[in-house]
Length: 360
Image (cartoon, rainbow, N blue to C red; front, side, top):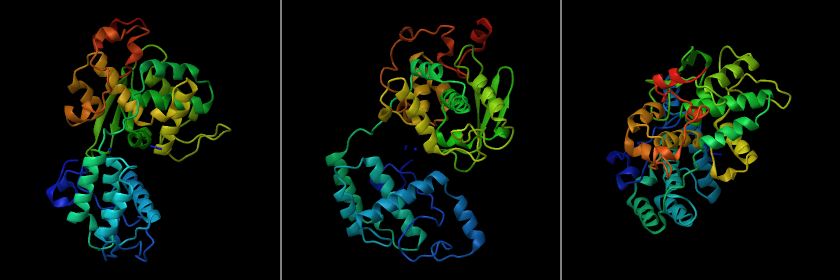
C-alpha cells in the first residue's frame, strides 16, 4: 500500500511532467530481457556498480520495479519503441492518474538507460501523447485523509497491552509528532534518537528530499496525557528490549519481536487497521496520513508555516500547502486545546512556557 523540479535536460520533465531528474537505479529492475544484472549500460566494474547501487533509494528501486512489471504485463519490453510507449499511455489514459503516469515513464526511462538503450520517453511522440492525456483527463491529485487528533486519541485509547499494540502506539504517536514519512519512520535506529527530560532529539540521516544524506534533526517534546509520543516510545523500547539497531520491527502473533526493521507497507497497514477499528473508512488513509495530520492540525491552531516546515522538512510553503487539508484555515477557536488538550499536538511546536505552566 501506499514523494521535483522540472529539468530541461531530463527529457520527460521538459514538458512539465512533475518529476525530479531521475536518479539512475541499481541494476535490479525486473525485466524479461537477457541483460545481466551485474552490469549497467555495459559497465561491469563491481566498484562502479557499488556506487550506482547507492545512487538510488530502496523505495525508488521498488517503485521502478513495479512500474516495469506493469509495463511488461501490458506487453511492453526493454528495449521498446516510442510508438509502443505512447500506445501504453493511451491504453491507460482514462484509468491512471497523472502522477502514476509520470512515475511509470520514469521507470521505463530508467530501465532503458540502465541497459544502454535509447530512451523512448524522450521522444516528442511520447511527450505529446502525455500532454494530450493530461489535458483531457487531468484531475486533482488524490490526497489521503489527514489523521485528526480526535482519531489519534481514539486509536490510542483502543489499544491494549500486547507487544504489538505497544509498538503501534509508538509508531503512530512518533510518526504524527515528527511529521515523518513512512520511509523516515522505518529508517530510525536507536543511535538516531537521544531521549531526555524535555523530549527527544531525532536525527534523520536520509530522506526523500535529502538523498545525499546531509541529515537533519527533529525535536519532539514530552506532553502530558495519553498522547505523549516520548512516553510511548520509551514503553516500546522497554517492552521490546531494543537497545540497538532498528527501532520499529515486526512483531509475530505470539508477541516475538523480530530483528529486522518493518517495511513502509507495514506502516500503512497499521494505520488502516486502527482507523477501521474506530469506524473510519480505511481506504481514505495511508501511512502519509500521519504527516498530513500533523501539518493540518498545526495550521488549524495557528502555528506559523515556517515552524511547521521546520518539523516536516518541507523546503517551501508551496509544497507544504499541499499537505494541509481543507478546513485548516479555520479560526484557532475551532480547536480547543485542553490539558488534556495541549496533547492534541504532541510535538516540539508547544511553547516552552506553555509546557511549564501545565500541571505535571
